[in-house]
Image 1 (cartoon, rainbow, N blue to C red):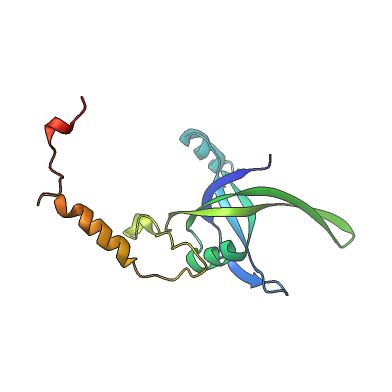
Image 2 (tube, rainbow, N blue to C red):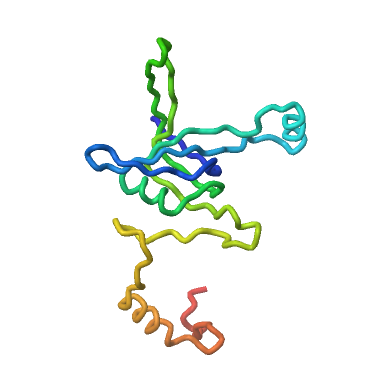
Length: 165
C-alpha cells in the first residue's frame, strides 16, 4: 500500500502549467514540521539543524487548478496521495527524485489566521467551477420550513412524553 498524508505550509506560490494535451499540472513544496519537543527544537535550531522537511508534491487536473486558485505561499495545506520515485540524467549523473502525487487536498487555514485574518479557508463547491456559486434555494426553503417549529430563542420544543428514557 502506498499512502501518504501530510499537513504543512506551502513554501512558495504554486505555479499552474498545462501539458501539450491541455491537462493541468501544478508542482508545489510543503514544509512539514518534524515532531520534537520544544527543548529539542530549540537545540536543533541553535545547532543549525533542520526542524522541518520540505516535500515536493505534484497535483493534476482539477486538483491542480484548485491549488493554483486557492493557495499561496504560507497557506497550510493537507495533502493525501502517494509516493512516486523517478530519475533523470543531468551532466552524466543520475538524479533520483521522490515526489508526492496528491490525490486530494484539504484547506487547513490561511497564512494570516494569526494576524486577524480568517481562521479557516472556505472549501469551494464541488464540480469543475470553483467560483462562488449561489446557494441552492430549494435547500434553503427546506431548511427554513424545518426550522419554523423553533421557538424564538432557537430551540425546538420538546414533549417529555416522547422521550424514550
